[in-house]
Length: 210
Image 1 (cartoon, rainbow, N blue to C red):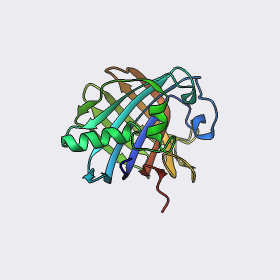
Image 2: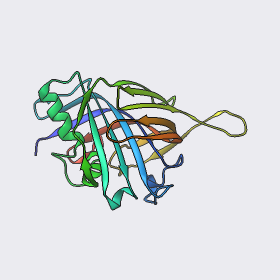
Image 3: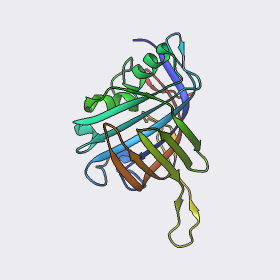
């Protein structure tokens, strides 16, 4: 197993209500899952290959809860990456070189029966975690935006976090809402549903806790 580690930020959007029951080991809001995320790697490596400054994304759907499997996914790799970096990033986001169920990448990959050929593309991404705002565009693949939850009476921005000390994706995430439209091999639209804005720090054995 090749050791690796990435430290960065993510914005994710799924079809569940704002709280996302999956975060609490409950069944998805609508009985099935549609979800996608974009990752900005501030620092990282896979073996001797540095991954600093690169990005990746993933688009997924499952006919039922994620843990029941039969899912479908496609990974997007930063066009700026060298061939060696592309291979390294793909191994990480595909759950390779990773202990079973240790990271969100490995969990998602292990529950997908169909994984489409990876896409290499420019990944345009802006993210303000504390402000709960994000925007992402990958030509021919996805458009995403994230915003804060608003108080239905006053219209004021509502702030809430999910903390997972033993999680496999993030230790703490700001929760907001998101809109997404995907095209290509996995196409769907999400509107005003769960959005998460988080720092991530992962390695081959799971979340880095230091």
